[in-house]
Length: 637
Image 1 (cartoon, rainbow, N blue to C red):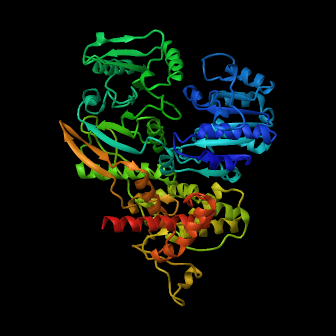
Image 2 (image 1 turned 135 degrees about the vertical axis):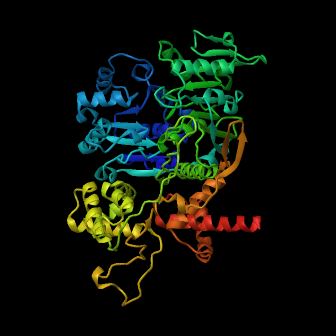
Image 3 (image 1 turned 180 degrees about the horizontal axis):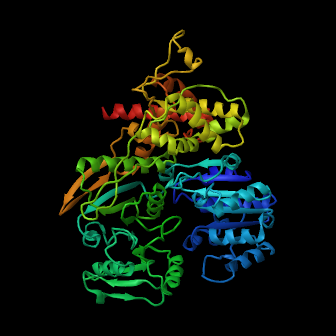
């Protein structure tokens, strides 16, 4: 991933999309140092969403690995190491100094931008970690900052994210800004292939019927390095206050004897003496007393496996948090944000000696629905997580189960969304072509979420297909791309049809076209509806026929559903199936391309990549996927 990102180091605006723990921070160091040494930039500012992530960008000796320079951060300009202080003034001082590197939070960067303006960042590299915090919304301060720096044209931006989804329908970047970014994409299975130790990821949904505190012993393995995310005190899953929940967890770890729990005043960690003679070191990130600073400082110094055993967190230790020894993330309460789920999983997927498997467990209240319905919903969630990990875009399942105990929404897959479109027309300008090639994903989200389209899903007869096609959808396109002319809007409208995967579509024979459609492609109708499934880059989970459930295990009062081990082979296979849906290829064509695949490998020293910008390389990668699948089928047969 770092080599791939470094190949694009000369881009003024660079967007790196790669899974958590894939080394984006190190990639930024290489790129930032090159921009200073070879591209005329003067300094690098790294912004992270929360202070605990700043440790990922601390001083790093890169020369030892063969790079031409070390990444050096003067302690004075690591503004994530302590609370308080005049941080905006510190940014201003840095910009006027001869120092080259500063690390701060998103908030500090925003305040500095508000006070100093875009001109203060001329000849700077502004690197924004967890870039999905940016929003195209006019009210987004971080989005305003990015738009201002792009508009000024004198700053370089490196945007990094493990999930290019915000969880709402607002795009991360405005189309006119996003079109200026060079994209680098890296998949989770590529990451696993590059690891020395970690080989697979497991996902489990564990249901409880009373209090989660009583069920915790079923899933909290004290021999595993674990991060426990407790539920918010305002959620229905929370049985009591946040500090009381921590006390209960510590008492459980001490086998019911609270006197075995002692706080180390130097590190801030709790030391828990187990009855079997073992001891646990536990970091409490829930406590917001002055001990919080001591604990955060101690976490930055954790380097060895034995330094820490368990972290208890509420709102922290999610995105960007780096504890390489973590092998299990236990999260209480259903998370309805796919971004949050992927970020939480990423806490356990860093490579470390002796860690061959990572596990994510979601502990949630048991639904009253039939187990078969819950199983289907969990499988959909597993598919959505897998698709997100390989950096394909997916609309997360909409769960709204009722729970036996709590009576609040938890999970259920929503129905497929119908859209009505007809028409095909080729782009006539570079702007339309760029939208068609790079931004149809976001446009489809806008169409699906449009209030009028939502009305149609409930009351199909409110608007005719023609009204939706010629009135509503063009309105959505024009709103998203206000710079387009009416004719260009129409071209984009036609491109959406070309991009989507039709269900029950039929091509007309010559002479059979309906004269009322002006020769446009017709589709088979179900009543008055033309059903178009989500397709191409948006993955339709209903059409991804993969069972990722390994086992369903009953226990007292409830049950758990465990996934298969998501390893490189399974994730690569899923990616191949997704690509096959949008790039049809026969076995014969794949066999015909095999010599070209071998030649590609010999010439470049690597396999063709499904995420390549070059369509030819994408097709060779698809052929390789088909050939490997055929070999597996023969071996298994």
